[in-house]
Image (cartoon, rainbow over all chains, first blue to last red; front, side, top):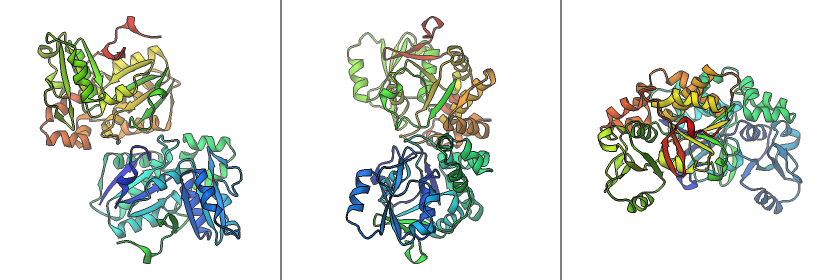
Length: 246
Length: 246
């Protein structure tokens, strides 16, 4: 099994994902929010790359079964029901609903990787369950960090490194690219206290300034969920074993 | 002083460098080759982004004062006098000459950063002299790693981390972005033995397969040069103190 990491979605062409297994990470906050929404009973999450498309997709739906969620530069978008805080995605709010999600980094990264044969979403919340699943399907894969505004972000690379470390604990003969080795090393240095790492990261500091302290705590909770978001037919759903492509 | 690192030239727009101080790194091998050429008496080095432009630029020159150098995917380009091995750029070959340099990653990265107010080239060979100079001009700066085919490369990020470590040894109050912190950490983990790190890197392995073992040794020699290549008017020359922009 070979693992490679992309530190940002930049540089990778959409078509380059064709046939690949891809893991998208946006710790702060899209991938944590997606795990929260699906863990709390959302029917599915539709990641979109533009606000315009979010509004268009939601236009055909009625009866309150659909919710627009997301942010632009940490702020909720006018007219959207929800922001990008995982704490908003409670069972009361999301059960049975389809969430159309637009975020500055994460939802765009998922859309970019849409041609992947297998596309999973990873956060600290669902790290070990995903590691085990990746071992069970035993395919080479790429981890795409969403980064922040197309630049590197510490939290995504540390999460990538922790996922790789988890896999290496359970499996031999894992071959790592330069970037995968770098993430493994960064997890060793910065991953011992994930909350502290988030608080000291560039993105974490901006969220703290905007009053999202509780979000950082939520996003740092290792393995608090058993949910694997899986992308198929433009929609993220909870992966059931029956849906696995082996 | 604030330091940021870009892991690849991707994602950064040419114009975003306007007014900035930028350090370009391509350890394997363009930035090492540029340091070698200028250390060995080349008049200047003209980095170009396309082979076509290299040929065009050289067309107007005569009398053997100009040499075309470079590579595409480690191989010398047909019709070029020199490849991209620093070992070819001996005093006998380069003294007094202008080198037109095209390489897969490094020369393109330099051209991308051409609007920088100050643009320096860094390799392991000239790391400390550059660190001291950056401290003396005391400006925020960006380190742009050339990477490999637009992807991350270990050796450039370790070199960036070593440059930052050197600066931190000599100066207080250095503010690091997420990526700069990551490089500092990667240098701690992988930078103790630079030759071993190069040999184990993805790019290093490809060069070894192509018979460039001696190049790796050359490129790993820490502080073997006192030369700082400085970019001005589309040309890299040796920085003299009189030329500094303060």
